[in-house]
Length: 147
Image 1: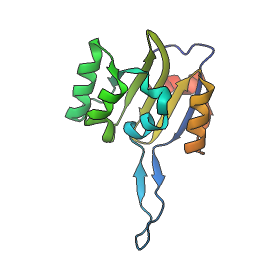
Image 2: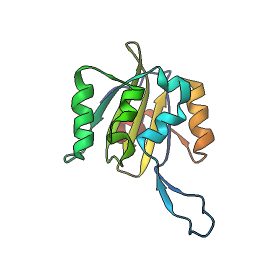
Image 3: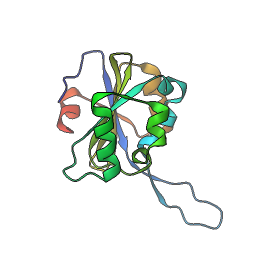
């Protein structure tokens, strides 16, 4: 568990969303994947490298591979998006985004039910709130409890 620096802010939002109904189809549920979140980060996210940590006892093999590959050398965003894991549903995991050697954002998938985001970057928080209006602020204690 990493301690939350005082400048960091955290928000949490539901991982499962109501999808917009398509003509002639019923509305369905949509799971927000890591790939979707990386795309929401836009050009900001393209400059980052990533380290994945899984807290699932039996992760999908693609997530296990992502954790293994990113353990020693962080993965650039485009390489991460080319892997299978970001397009799948995670169970429990942290995806840490670095600018150089600085940890600048953590995307935490908690229990397949929510995504928690920790960053000091106001632009990132605003983008998350814009795309996921149910995003609510979290305290450091709440953040620590989801790990």
